[in-house]
Image (cartoon, rainbow, N blue to C red; front, side, top):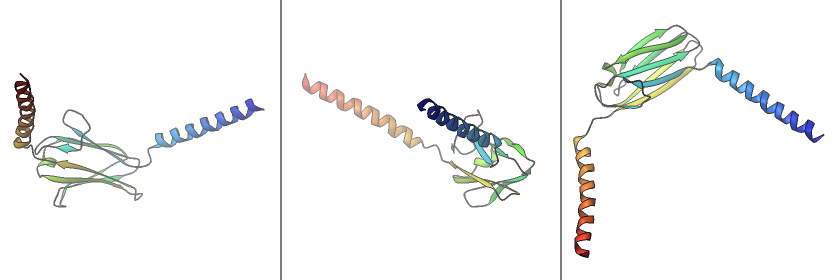
Amino acid sequence: MKKIISLLLFGLILVSFATLAANVQAKENPFIWLYDKDGNTRDEFAPGEGIRIVAYDSAYFTIKVYDPDGQPRLVDTSAPGYYDTGVRYDLTDKIGPWVVEVRDVKCKFAVSMYNVIPEVLFGILGTVGACFTGFGLKYLRASKED
């Protein structure tokens, strides 16, 4: 009797896993992926850096990219399947949070965000200064012990 219950429990777990895997493979909902020019997934970019936006939906959909001021910078319509912008350098020219939206005819949508942040020279200099300060304090402590 214990073996039958164990087999039934294992069968139920297996069936529920198979159902979950089938639902994931169906890809009913839209998806958005953000890549840099080298193909790495990212959500922070430097001004003027290349960005590649890939979207997927199982129905006809519209992709919109809004700049930090809320102005649409890219509006395009796509057939069902994958949509790829290619590497674009004009979608990172303003500093701040950008919004990517995919909306299909079934009223399903996906929203993604990425930030364009400036490269700060002072941050790099501050980090180097902090390292040398730590080494300097260690050197002073070692020289006092001598």
